[in-house]
Every structure is written in structure tokens, then in C-alpha cells.
Amino acid sequence: MNTFTLALTLLLAKHSLSASLTDWQRDPELLPNFFQGDLVNRPSIAKWRRNVISNTIYHWPNRTVFYFIENGTFDEPHLQYIRRSMHRIEKISCVKFVEASSDQKYFVNITSDEDGCHCEYIGWRNQRSRVNLGIGALDQGCFRMGSIIHELLHVLGFEHQHVAQDRDEYVRILWENISPENIINFFNNETYIGWNNYGEEYDYGSVMHYISNAFAKNMSQPTIVALKTGGSKMGQRRGLSKTDVRKLNKMYKCPGYV
Ligand SMILES: [Zn+2]
Image 1: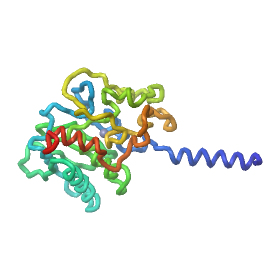
Image 2: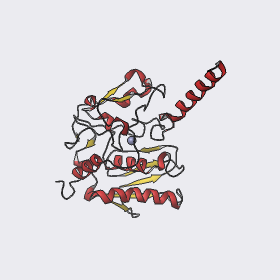
Image 3: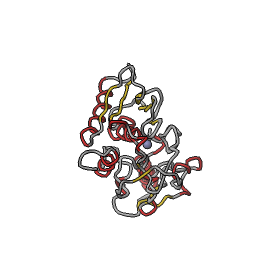
């Protein structure tokens, strides 16, 4: 191989490497610079085995999420994706999504006012809250079905998987690779009460798990490394994992899970 061919090979290898990397800086769940990337308000309560909010005061009353999709914000194909995501959750649980009437006091307002996808509160609040889904191509960015479901699970009371209290048995956090301003997004040592994992094991395939280079200083360096098998599933956004389904059903005491 002559020098020119070698240089060309190296250049192409470098290009294909950077093109194939998952670039968290382009991931719309990680763009908005909110807590853990897409949480507008930092959760105030956490506990050992953290991941799902178990304090029932933050569960949607009557297992019913009232929502309002801002008029004129989304075209029909995007609206269909939002409704299909809600329908997927309804199909695998006893949770219902109901369009809010004009006198509904509490509901989640679905907007596309800003770039990126983010959620105002984890779980229910007795007031209007907001989820933003930045408009983009279908099956990409915030309009991957799994990304919409990810935000809806925040609404229902899920936090990110990588902050579960037992995470150090399953992943190694490479603190040195995390950009300094985002180190807080990996803390999981709060000692307040109100969270649970409902007896479910850490789940690399959860739709609430971030990609392996989330919040990295250098996108080619991982920040989360799996210690057991299944790590390749981290960051999937196709939809709910089996464990996500069980947690949601246990959380909302769906028939067969009580
Ligand atoms: Zn999130």
C-alpha cells in the first residue's frame, strides 16, 4: 500500500467511524441543556432503586393522562405519530390518554415551540404541564416513536434508567469522559424517599436508557459502559422494553400486576 492509498484509507476509516458514531450532541433528548438532558425541572425526590416514581401522589388520578395538543402545531402525520405512541402505551397497560376539555384543570400540553424533546415534570401535577416535541422528520429525532414514548413515560412518572440506584452493578460511569457541566446528570445518590424499581432488574433495553456516549466531552468516548451482557441495547428508541411494560403496569396497579 503506497503512502497515498494509506492516507486515503485512514481518511475514509476516520470518516466512516465518525459517521457511524451515535452523536449525543445531535440527540434531541440531550440537546436542550435541561437536567439529564430533557427534564425541565429537576426531580426533588429520589431513593434507593431510583428510576420510577412510586409516591402515588405523582401518579395520574384514575390512570388517565389528560393531554392537549397545541392547535396548528403539528401536521397530520406528526399528530398520528403522537397518537400512535399514546395508543402503544394504552395497549400494554391500563393507562389511558384522554384529550383535555376546556375546563380540565390539569393536563399535559404537547407543544413544538422549541428544538429538542423535553418534559416539564416527572409524573402528575395538579396543574398544566408541558412536553415539547421538536418538529423534524418522522422516525428521526423527537419523532422516533420511542422518543415520544420516552417523554410520555416521564409524564407518567419514569426517570432515566442510568440513575437507578443499583446502576453501578450494571454500568460503569466514565466520569472523566463526561463534559463537566453535565456531570450532575449522572448523580444518583439523593436519599429522599419516593422512588422504586418495582422489583425489576436494571434494564439496558429500557426506552429510558441513554446512549453510551451521552453527555460526553468527546463523542467518540463512552460515558456509560455496560458491565454485563445486553449493553448494545442502550439508547434504543423503538419502544417500550418488557421491563418498561412491567414497571408501568405495577406502578399504576393494572389488573394482573397488583
Ligand atoms: Zn428523558
